[in-house]
Image (cartoon, rainbow, N blue to C red; front, side, top):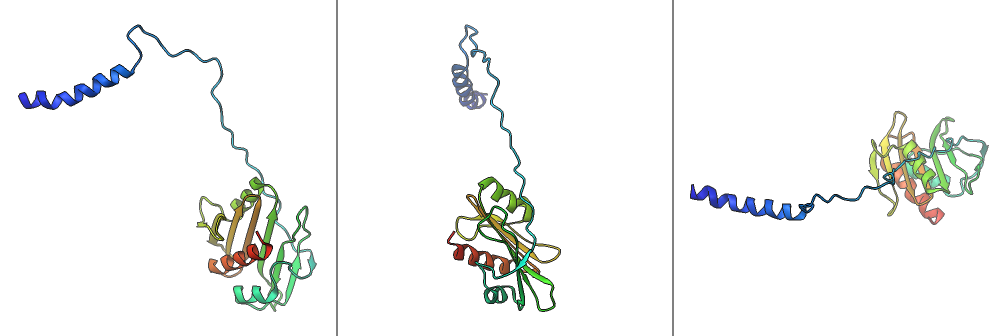
Length: 183
């Protein structure tokens, strides 16, 4: 019996301390607030339309040889998108048989739009985390037609989509593009 009484002492001390922290015995309550509690709304910013190839040209931030070496296929044609509101076009690379092999989409503008682009192309919730180059974040994953690596930093995004299943190829190209653009 004595052991039970001794072991209950710490519990009684905790209860007494908690009671001392509560409202006083006069029944005082916290003052009622008339303002509604703050609400948080998450506005989803839509990503812009996925760019499409428009004209033949040279990609200003990824040359054919680097694209060939990184993606592992010869490049015989390069097409560019019309850079609607952007300083840089998106670049599309094609194989000798005329089929597409690689797309690089760069965006420079709103941070919310940059994140929306990344989340649209490599959903952060379901893809593998992408954290390179240093300071960039996004997702990386194989797709039905190849692989994608999509990252953003502040108001910039880089998305590389390849017909190859290895995401390391898209990551290498992303690193090159970010470096070439000086981002």
